[in-house]
Length: 147
Picture 1 (spheres, rainbow, N blue to C red):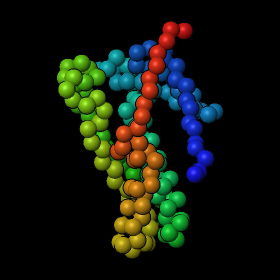
Picture 2: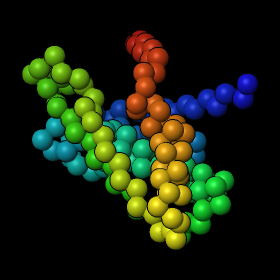
Picture 3: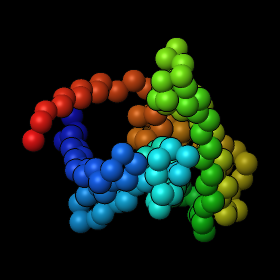
């Protein structure tokens, strides 16, 4: 069995819409659009889900292509999510709170054949950790206390 990776972040809320997250030596700022009470001063937490997916797909594309002997000069990845805001806004508690669907399009600069690219796509889809977290249920435990 492989050694488990343990990722931990700390987020500090400055207001309902604005927060700062510390991840390793980095600070990540999040905000919401004006219509959700923010100042639109940074990407929203939902944007970071899309960005995390795109970044992981990029890493896995290069990583697995290297394993397969496929040369890649670069990638352009778009990830689009569709979300019904009914649950988080309290207007419709019967819908899912998160994205109802995600679509990722990976364009690669490569001279690989169509079959090599399809094999690469299938391996990236199967092995991307963020795709796995989005696609499959992950146990989540949330506790809250006064500080």
